[in-house]
Structures are given as C-alpha cells and as structure tokens.
Length: 345
Image 1: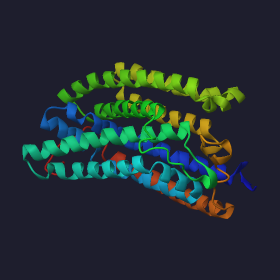
Image 2 (image 1 turned 180 degrees about the vertical axis):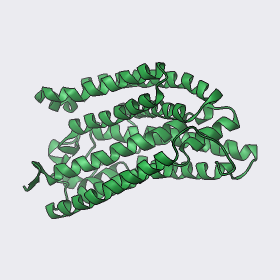
Image 3 (image 1 turned 120 degrees about the vertical axis):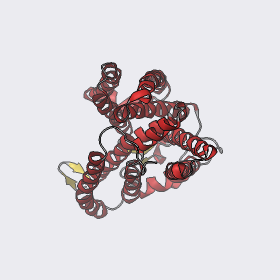
Image 4 (image 1 turned 90 degrees about the vertical axis):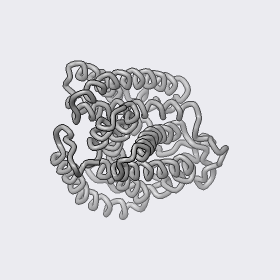
C-alpha cells in the first residue's frame, strides 16, 4: 500500500476525520454547554447576554460538523453507511434538536411577548442539552461496539438498543463536560451578576463532570477491556491519558484563580485529548462488531480507493487553512465582553 510521509492513506484519512470532529466538539461543545445552562438564568437580560455570547459563532461552529460528515462519507463510505443506519434514531433526533435550537436562537428576540421568549428559551435549552447528550450516546455505542453482521449490515436488536448503560454514562459525561466548557466560555464573555452566577454554576458543572468521568472510566476498564489493549501493548501511549488527566486538573485550578481564558484553553485541550484517547482505543477499527470480530469495520475494509483518498487529501490541504482562517476571523471580530444593542438577539 502506498504511503505519504510514512503513513498509508487510510490512516491519513482517519486522522483528518478525527481532527474535524475534534474541532467540532471543541467549538460546538461550548455553545451546547452555554445553552444547557440557559434556564438557570432567571432574568431576561441575562438570557439575552448568554444567547448573544454564542449568537455570532454558533452557525460557523456547525460548519465543522458538515465537513466532518462529508469527510467520513468520502473517506470511509462503508463505515458511513453502517454507522448511520445503525444509529438512525439518535441521528434523526440530533437533526431535529439541531433545527429546533437554530430556530430558537433566531426567532426568540423577534417578539417581546413573555410567553414567546419563554417558549424559545425552553426549546433552546432543552435542545442544547439533548444535542450534547446524544453526541455522548453515539460515542458510547461506537466504543462499546454494534451488532454488525455479514456484509457489514447492522442487526437491529431493539428500538432503544442505543440507550444501554455505557452509552448513558458517556452521554451524561459529555453533557457535563460541555456544560463546564460552556460555563467557562460565558465567564469569558460576560460580567456583573450573570458572571457571579456563572462562577457558582461552573463549580457544579465541574463536580458533575468529574463524578461521571470517573464512573465512566472505571466502567470502561472493567467491562470494555478491548479499549485498553493498545495501551497495554504500547506503554508509551499512556502519555495520552496523562495529558488528559493533567488538562482536567488544570481547569478548576485556573478557574479558582479567575484565569478563565486559560481555563477555557484547557477545557478545549481536555475535549481534544479525550477524543485522542478514543482514536487510540479504536485504531485501526472504526466500528467493533459485537457479533463476531470478523465483521468489524476498520480503516482498510471501509476505505475509498487509494486514488480517491490521495486526491481528497489535496482538497483538505487547500480547504483546511480557509476554514481555520474563517474561524479565527469570526472569533477575532467578536472578541471581548457581550454588549447588547438594537441588533442583538
């Protein structure tokens, strides 16, 4: 198999897809988390400030999801087909909540009726909570494995099969991680009474995340042993969980010192490093089969042709700097504390 800089093209594409979804998790993670706290803010002014903190960036963050999904389809069409058919229900729910959330952000401020604003506040917050939770549920199913049989066909075993104990744990862990990430982002963007309230909410989010992260880690080690095989075979890989634990520990330390920009950087590193752990645990497998390992989908039996991957990497090399430049420009333009005016949500 042909290689580029010592890596074969399926491995390169695995890294590209992983990087795109990591970028999406970091960026959309904080606005899902910010939305999850929304109903904890009682004043209309506080809710407007919180919503305007994510208002200029939320739709740009979702670009990473679109590109990541396209890259997955282009690079690993077999995995894409099996994955989306097996996780059809959570993905359809995700799409519904994504639409409801976008509508809520855009139309909440169009009328001044209290019932109107309260309705879309509720829709916005619940949608944000469910989006974060569903991402974790899907990730839990990927790590645990799916009932994949011959010809990589998903063997449907029940309407709510995706809601198993492990996926629920990863769902709540992801939700509280994003809520912590979102609270820190709002602390960077707000001031006054809302800022003071967020300092309290951040502590609660951190505690809940650490509790569920600890439980999920223990469950993984005890009941899903195949995820630790690569670490046992290559002790050098233990540097990845070490970085993750250190980045998690740095978040409350920096928050206590009120260095919220640095805390946000480390919560971003936490999310990215946790996804690096996922990549290490999976590689080269993309989807484990719980029926028989011979039916598992990996980066080789799911890949597009080598020529296709080679050409698509050229497109990535051109497009990635453009996306990064656009993202940097948007965040640079809307830096600083939120100030409401007549154009605000």
